[in-house]
Image (cartoon, rainbow, N blue to C red; front, side, top):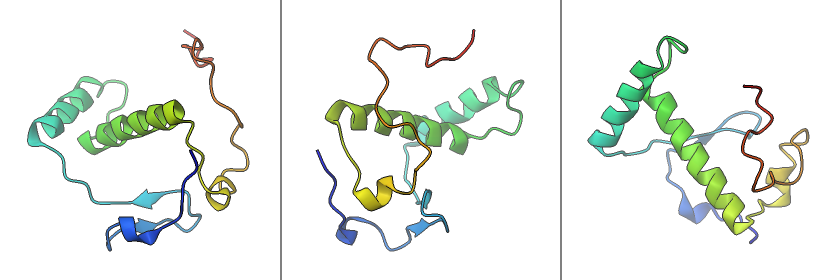
Length: 103
């Protein structure tokens, strides 16, 4: 699946970082979800004391998007892929669960 560039499907307040790799958006979340993210952030405070509910929400959204993109074999337009020249091409193997993280 290949993406098409179309500005019709974004809000007016959406902003892009100078390097084009980060997009700043305003999201609406259910209060229960927010409180869960806040409590999860508090649980992880010993390891990440400055962590916030918003950090948790960004992480959840990123993980969900990456998984779905991988499931669909989604490919960004070439001008977007060019923003990430140092990123390894290809996807993780389905059985590569540890992602090379030493335990």
